[in-house]
Structures are given as structure tokens and as C-alpha cells.
Length: 210
Image 1: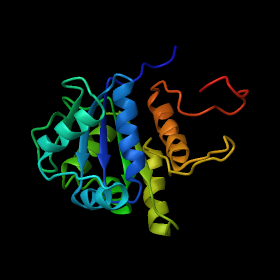
Image 2: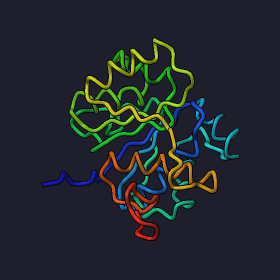
Image 3: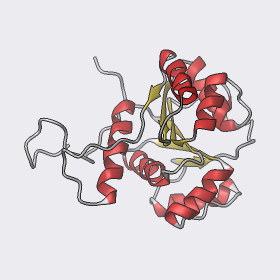
Image 4: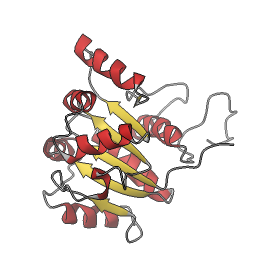
């Protein structure tokens, strides 16, 4: 029997390049009926503005209102928490999200998670996901990887964390940047067992869908 898809997914934006992946992931999760708990770092605010012209204000309530309107989210489906909001549910193992994705994930965030630092809500939520045995997916956007990066990834992978670099395939003959983004987001959704039709799967004939 297959495991059910998660009802609540925590998504964290950090300061790596790749904000289109994270934003598209939030959009798809909401469209699939998931509740999304969103976190974002200070550097993610800079990256969002640089890569997408997207303003992520410092006040989480403003981000929540803007993204809920952008994605036409049902009331209560999208909640945005501040970096130091220690009374947020995902800060405790008594009320964690069903799954968590850090997308995009900086090497600094990955290292902090590997070391169990929990110095902000993103790191703490990831720490909770690991200790509670919940699905944790990291989408590290860096190249090349140093030996330090690889050792941190290996440490986390041995704990059951999914390391999913945003490496799009080309067998679907992508025509746009959006196609490349959807390929990566589809792989994340597959890890979460969230149904989607973003890409055609390997071995399917043209027109069979995804």
C-alpha cells in the first residue's frame, strides 16, 4: 500500500539562486490541496528581487497576503512565519509539518542542518523533520560542489534526507525556462507523493500526460 501524500508541507526559501523553483513549488502544492507553511531567509529576499522582481517584505503577514492572492489560495492554506517565530508549530516535534522542502538551499543552510545548529526557524524546522522521521528534501543550488559540500550532503543522505540538486533533464525537449523549472519541481513533488501533470514521464508515449 502506497503512503499518503502529505497534508502540510513546510517550504523554505534561502539565498541560493533558484527562486523560480521555490515559488513554482509553492504554487503546485497549493493547487494540489496541500497546506503550505512558508519560511524565507533575509538573503532570499534579495534573490527573489534579483531573479524575479518579486518583493518579499520583512513582515510575514504581508508576504502571506501577497502570495495567497497571487496563487488564489484558499484561506488558511498558506501560512508564512518569521525567521525568529519560535512559537510557530513547525518549531516543535509536537506539531511538525508532514514534510519539508528547502528550495533553493544554500550550502550554508545545508551545513547548518547537517550540524544541527537550529539557529533560526528554517534550521530548527529541518532539525525537527529529521528527528521526527518526516520527509526532508533539500534542493542545493551550487556548482561546483566542494568536498565540504559533498561531505555534508552525504551525512544528511545517510540520515534519510533527500538531496535533490536542480538538474533538469532534456529528454522532454524543453522549449522554455518554465519547462526546465517544472522538470525539477516535478521531481520534488514525486518525492512528496503529490500528484501532478507537470512533465511527461520517461517511457510514456507523447500525449499520455504526466
